[in-house]
Amino acid sequence: MHTKTIVDLSSGLKEGAFSSEELVQHFLKRIDQLDPDLNSFITVTGEQALAAAHEADQKIKAGGAGPLTGIPFAHKDIFCTKGVRTSCGSRMLDNFIAPYNAGVTEKMQQAGAIMLGKTNMDEFAMGSSNETSYYGPVKNPWGDNLVPGGSSGGSASAVAARLSPASTGTDTGGSIRQPAALCGITGIKPTYGRVSRYGMIAFASSLDQGGPMARTAEDAALVLQTMAGFDERDSTCVDQPVPDYTASLNDSIQGLKIGLPKEYFGEGLDANVARTIDEAIAEYRKLGAEVVDISLPNSKLAAPAYYVVAPAECSSNLSRMDGVRFGHRCKDPVDLEDLYKRSRGEGFGEEVKRRILIGAYALSAGYYDAYYLKAQQIRRLISDDFKKAFEQVDVIMSPTAPTTAFGLGEKTKDPITMYLSDIYTIAVNLAGLPGMSVPAGFVNELPVGLQIIGNYFDEARLLNVAHQYQQVTDWHTRIPKGFE
Ligand code: GLN
Image (cartoon, rainbow, N blue to C red; front, top):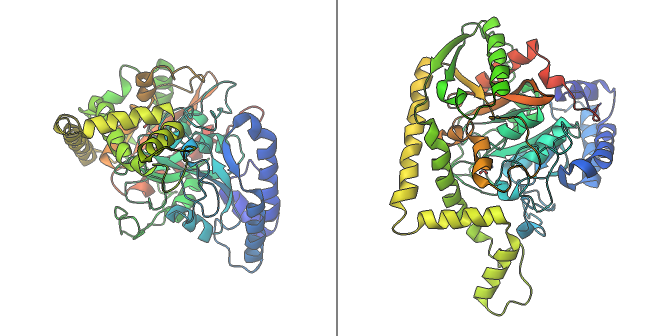
């Protein structure tokens, strides 16, 4: 059952081949057996899942089932889940039981999907390797001591290891796409504003966006269909109808114009990854697509601008974690200042502290213009680059990450090298565009992801372009050894 896609599981449920309860039991058993080593879950909500599955089965019997009714999935532990610990990978929220559901949580629940548990992640979504989690690193099922990528590392690892058919993730600078690439699964970061951020614990509010992680583009389309849509509780959520993402999956891509930005194929890119991406592009040519060389001249400014904007916004967002209202509180504070200092000092990990310090510095009087304002200006230049490119092409393609999965501990000592894992994904968030990662081959038995970037609200096209590729390739069906 665990090798089936959501689409297959959904028809199996409707035909009565198995019940949702059986399905949930099956996945819970796999989590029990295989996750102690992977560490992809922070919390498993078995009892709750079985009760929800029981309800879903009745609904299916009564004929009122939708495509996600009774389908198990996992939530990144950044989405508030009522009555369930929502830790955000941090000691600070280790004891935080969310009193309400996030917009996304609500929608998934209403669609009848069954939450198996909450997945591990980099602390407050800051990281590219899932090594900053208070709950310990996640392992990549494709290799013994390899990172799954981050920050949605638990979500990616769980789907790749077939512990869950799909999961939710969030992407501030690449956190859906990069771990999807490193774990050989399919993930899409929607346009900023497409998916509600209500109840999704904020890292950098102008960049954060939730989205699905699944094995196929078709499954991702089904999940996005449910996740997307207006939510008045998020003032940046866009009130625009959600198209039928599955309706256009089978459209021909004959004549599709693919832009290849030269800046995404240069220095820093592993030669084997480059070759794999070339082969994927060749496959697209065979499908009738036309390839155009383009330039995104301000690309090299994306990472530096991001590492001002993201820390600046996080320093503001994380100020609410003060030991007073919720989360970790130090023992026996002598006064208010001691309470703040020790609660925050104990509750936050090293990477989070580094970002808060950088952000507070960049926002301080005298430096604001030099750093934050400058970064915002660069952001505009980057958006303009994409705008020009989309006058010429329909989608842009590139590698998702410059290398395949790296070793645990390999980059933790040097934050700058770690930050470079996201050089191809970050600009997409700065511009607010949708981006996707699709399994495109292997280098030394490790998965490589192809990134597909689209114009604003062009998710349906991205999913179509990915689905067409998945009809002629089988990279997305490969299962890591030991997880068959
Ligand atoms: N790796 C990037 C960072 O550390 C992006 C993280 C994310 O998208 N949440 O900030």
